Amino acid sequence: MLKKILPLFSYIFHPLFISVYAVLVFFFFGKHSYNYQEVYLVIIQIVIITIFIPVTVYYLLLSLGKVDSIMLAHKNQRRLPLLIHSILLLILIRKSITIDYFPILYFFFLASLISTFWAFLFLFSRFKVSLHQLAIASFTVFAIGISMHYNVRMIWILVPLIVCNGIVASSRLVMKAHTPTELVLGGLIGGIPQMGVMYFWL
Image 1 (tube, rainbow, N blue to C red):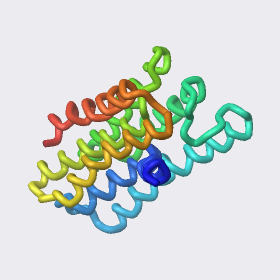
Image 2 (cartoon, helix red, strand yellow):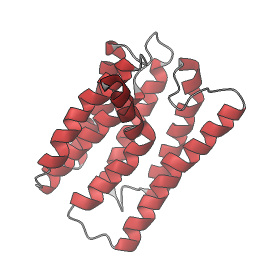
Image 3 (tube, one colour):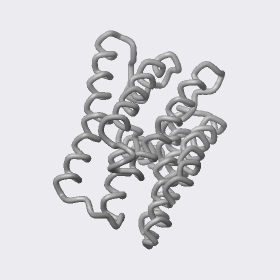
Image 4 (cartoon, rainbow, N blue to C red):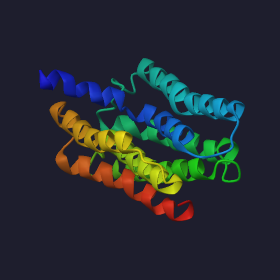
């Protein structure tokens, strides 16, 4: 039963959705003066750039026989998607989520870009870094930062998030997608850059 439930978390916390989760947490818990039109516009842009375009690229690669699963199980299948994702994140922080208008989100996506770059570099090693663990670790650290920055109690968000880090790791192990070392590397590569950029906005 547990082996059937755990894989669901790999889809719920798929790396494609993490950016949207982070933006929703920022706008819901943050004390800011953005109007509804600005909030909706940002969310739509995030959905298009971090979900719609990557999914479109995935189906293109699938039709060309370059990938065989949305989970990108093989290292050689991850190189092009990670490069494209890096380019999309770069466009996002250069043209849309700029440091002038959305400084906190800017640093979240900057750290995400750094994490993605490191995940790409690790493809040339013998380790296949867990992108799921990378994503949920970065989201968790960001949520902790939001709680600290705005002095908002988010226990009912943070505690489940921390627990979900373990559940996602267990899910990836049950699915035999990663080794424990690859999961730890994913968590570090996702969390450390977010901690690093907090210096600029906490």
